[in-house]
Image (tube, rainbow, N blue to C red):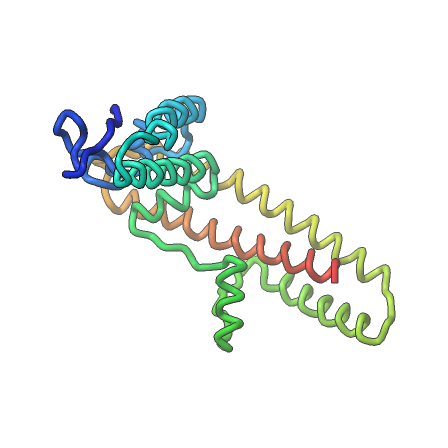
Length: 229
């Protein structure tokens, strides 16, 4: 899958269309790196393919080329780096595959939270059922900690409780990652000809787990902020 310098007509030097990530020549990040659309990837092969493509697309190779070709090289290098970062990371890799399968996760990022706050709207977050009691207790502790800081009081026991909650949440994050890997096995065992119902069943489980994990990640971030302020 060689990448060759394109000319102004949008073709390579030998007349074939140059290949964009997610373009005519390449279906997706997995295909770009010549990897199957699986989740338990061969990371060594991914790294080899990344370095091989990096050498072909590096902007330094296009310094004597036209402005269009230089721009194309920088564009493709940027996309290559994004593809590599996505597939190398277990969470981002799963999220990406779910998007390819037509599933969008709840937006739980810090950026999304700040954008909603700036708009004056309430951020809609679904609290995972197994966390309802823990979230209620955390909210009570945060409120108590805020009141203590306003009045100048200190409560070492409360701080220790929050630190313990943080450790518990981080352990839940790790446990969910291990559970996610078990769903990888289920997904990877499916073939392209597997019934849609079977594929949807596995992707739905992964999406639910990632939404729960994102919620917990945000709780850990909030606990850290409460302890630092």
